[in-house]
Image (cartoon, rainbow, N blue to C red; front, side):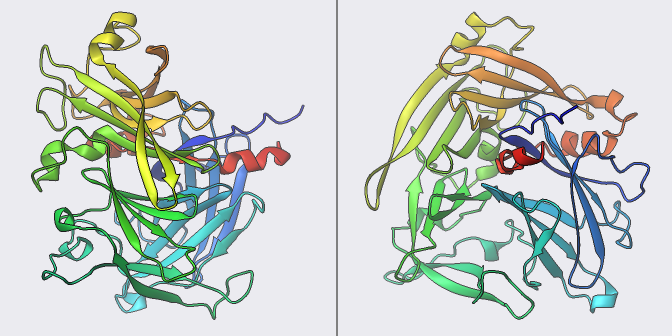
Length: 399
């Protein structure tokens, strides 16, 4: 019997399922895509992808024999994905390494699915965007704003131990008086740009392949009102906004959910509602980009067309555009009642204003008795969006 085809895109769970013993590590039937490698300090690692058609969520399983207990340290973090490539980081800080934080970045290439490409080791600190050093400081009048860009380059087609990381400072061309409290929520590639996204304000765009030295420009999100306060935690903007690249990396979509009850994170107040707007970034001329509104839907419209069984009357969170069908948007919904939460993935067709599907994501207290216990605990404390990936479509030849 032929193997089932891999999905053309997946929603990857950022939480990495560390399963160091062979009994809990998934077998080939559950996670057929596997890769092995070793860190720069010769620690072996083994990965397995469990890929599922959205709205089901895909997973990454990892084995790290010899690493500290997973309760003490989670060494692997998913970074980003682009076309057939998937980037993740393995880091550790141990006395054996002199207390130095050492990070290895690996690239999984779906065109060569059994191996990992190791980038040169990096001793830069973990990206903690809550630190003031990761924000844009105020500059004296007339002085250019700059952003630090960390790059790795090679003189050959493949990276090797002799290659080194390099940092450069790139100027920000726009008036960034509003950006002194910038905090990066995520970084995504779009066309030939690298985009740092602060869901409270907008996007810093860098043309990394520019013939001249790279420069950064600022693009505001299409919001009815630009933030007048620096207290981004009150708005919880990262919970209700999402940017996604679709159409083979040629289009950037932005979804904004604006609730009208003044609450940051939590259930809707009685009688309150929300409005969802979807935009596409349009390039008019070189260097000129504008947002075009695609859809605008109120909660009243959604609730009038969909029963409470398929769309409970509460807030939607973490919008994610469907890469194959950009008129469909995936959201998370939570019960908010208990510390161990139940959550669902809701898919809404923005054209018809109807619910396509409503499926369980985590199962609250009941989930603790399953293999998803660690995921249930983590996401109950810190809900998070998913990473859209297209590398699965490049695995079609293996199915």
